[in-house]
Image (cartoon, rainbow, N blue to C red; front, side):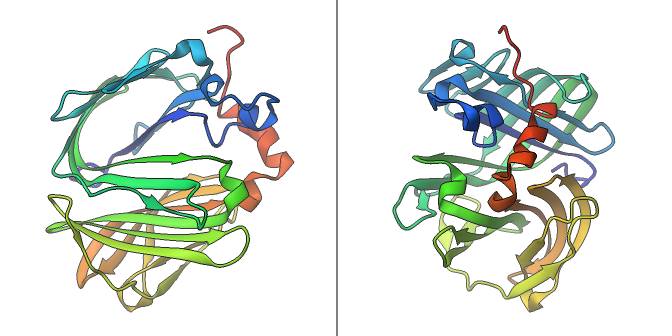
Length: 286
């Protein structure tokens, strides 16, 4: 998010795109045949791109990954992301550079399921970000978050739903993650990290109800001091996923938190998957 709270972005490099309908429909289930650089801009110059590409469009090394014309590079100090994508369903160009400088790194990954088949590593919960786009014309600085996920099976095989949120704190960041397992039960991760990435203990705040999204009626909930939180903006309102900006209180501090709700029960509905190619094109030739 930008320091003034008016602009935001999300960038995700996918190998084996977990939300790809083509991956779900394929017989081979080859993750390298389903790659994408997902780029979303929030604010008055909103854009969405998630073009799926085949293995020939993927290049990677220990400090570099490229999917088609977009790439990420780690130089030992900062992650530089060069974006050159075309949006969908509106074919608007998204081209520019994002530079993320972590303030520190956390110790390692967490397992999200009992079998250890799904791993999540919030590598740098507290980072600084510089954004410089020429299409659209957009430049800002703000706070950012850098993580990585990997798994050995489809998300919907292990989980029915989850909610997640991250908030900046004066000395670092807080992350709240509530995962509901497909076979019953669940897991709560209430985490607080100092700016250097060291973890501090935090008691899970009480649950806080949130209104469902306006269009698709996606359920939302979170945690907050006193069990109270409110939605400031809804950035994504889809049949199975919602991304929102919340006003909450954590550790006695008033915060603005980026929040997501994911329903994997909804996602695996065949009708929902038939809708996804409108947002996730897959060119015949790449």
